[in-house]
Image (cartoon, rainbow, N blue to C red; front, top):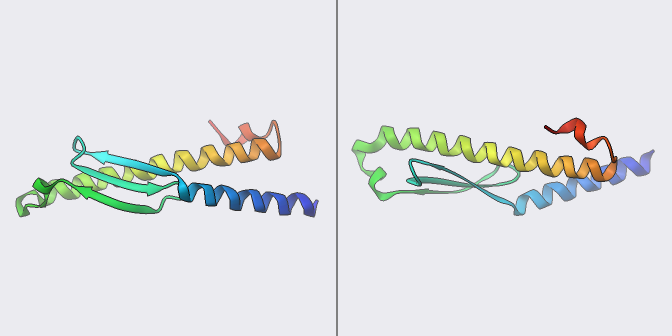
Length: 101
């Protein structure tokens, strides 16, 4: 029993390490704002179109940042869930579907 718990912990750590290497992108405003994050939902960078940096575009920039961040976090969550399902199906065949869609 403890061997299986140790193996599960090790596999979970491996999945977390793998998720650090996966990059997802969230965009808004037809690419005016791009946000990169990893599979562990950590934002890595922002790219913002020069035109949005003008003071009169402040509200649009804020709106687009919100949309792009929400999109990238959603993508990262999907990647994370997929990796966890794969791990569970490897550890316990037949039970992986309990955690997925």
